[in-house]
Image (cartoon, rainbow, N blue to C red; front, side, top):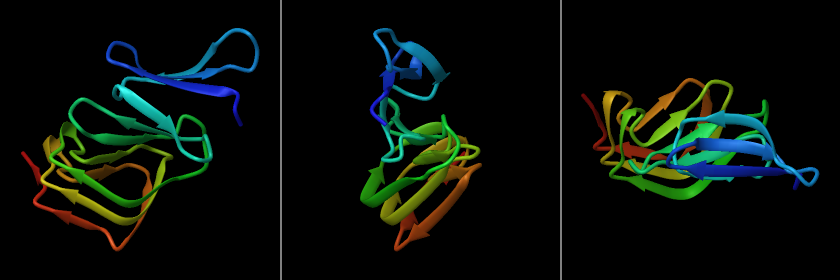
Length: 129
């Protein structure tokens, strides 16, 4: 709606602020990664980390993140590898390719606590320790 700002940093993680007036008011924060962008609905944030992992975070209930014709390659993470879909988050993907991602504990290519709808998508050569 144009009144929210998302920030990602190495030290603070991801933060969502209300920028409706002259000051910024912190609405939500999570230690996920360093780069962040809102989904089109503004209800979720897509986060990239230095381990080349993408996470979907529903900081606000509702909505979904959509990925079309996207490749995620060579990611490493503690959990999830290429994708981590958090509780109450939703990923809708068409022609998603996740390849050669690894996770230390579980997931390899993807871990989903939330929901997902994958069409024409492939997961290849992903591993979990």
